[in-house]
Length: 291
Image 1: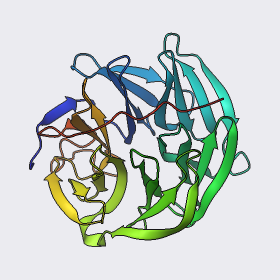
Image 2 (image 1 turned 180 degrees about the vertical axis):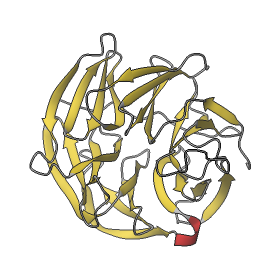
Image 3 (image 1 turned 90 degrees about the horizontal axis):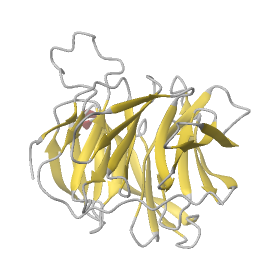
């Protein structure tokens, strides 16, 4: 598997992030964090619908066929798919206006891990929080840009990264609650010359697919941390992968124009959402349990 297959969505996001499939509706949802948009497009293609948001949101998960959960700068919101109405479910770091949400993903039990970071990427301002059936708990602090949150299919292991440090860690998790167990261990250390680890997913075979911000690649790692594939992407700042299609066998990857020259003659596909060549054994994320 090498190279890239095509463009899933030609709209250039300022900071495309947080893609998540909704298999019941056959659609992919993702965010333009800085543009304050929720993007929506059928797996099969067609028109991309942009939904204006009142807040900066960074990740999306499905609650059921009628409701989405958005992780946003000031809290978790429930969004009615049919009407677009949003309701604040719980505040997030309400005493820290200098931070916003970032990467997040749902554990197989339905618990959410959601990262926060400084609005100016201030060193050490980042954290990762756990939310499950109305309860919120802080898991990790002292990070700068938390990313690459993903879980194995059996719920026994998680990964997460600090993009600024270039480190991806692995830690055991309780399958029933999604809470971490024991100490984290280094899974991958990314050389600064190769970019920074951004969003990730783990497929049904246990491969970790990690987008490389600044590295123009999507890299796959075996469960022992060995890099087994590297796919060149047509934008330097790729941000996060997701599985789409009726069988979750196609990878898509979001990207960003943030901080780039407006002309972008050397990065003309920046901000687009891409499809990756070849079939994978992906899996859809579980619904998030809000009660």
